[in-house]
Image (cartoon, rainbow, N blue to C red):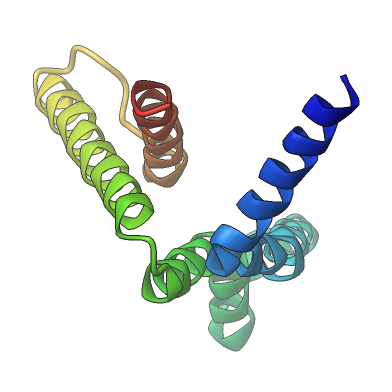
Length: 148
């Protein structure tokens, strides 16, 4: 019983050392990804406070603040792919990303055609990145289950 617990602890320690890029990514998510959502919240507050009077530099600042989560996650994934040395992990992540791009393109293309025929309401572009994130997460989970 004690030996099994020691073996489990050794495996967990080994896993932590395997991919330092993964742990740097988690730190970046915490210190860059989450604050970007706070910046987006500041943008929403400014938009509600100033209403339709946003012009010039304030409008540009609100656009950048509202886009900061998207920009942050693209930069974070770029840095992660650049640092990941495990080819299998990089292949799984890039495969999941490719499938997510394809699924997002498929859904938005079909929705666009249905919009042309006035069968559905206009698609809000702000949902494209979250849709991509959902497809990416699902496909990555499927791949990890497949290769467990």
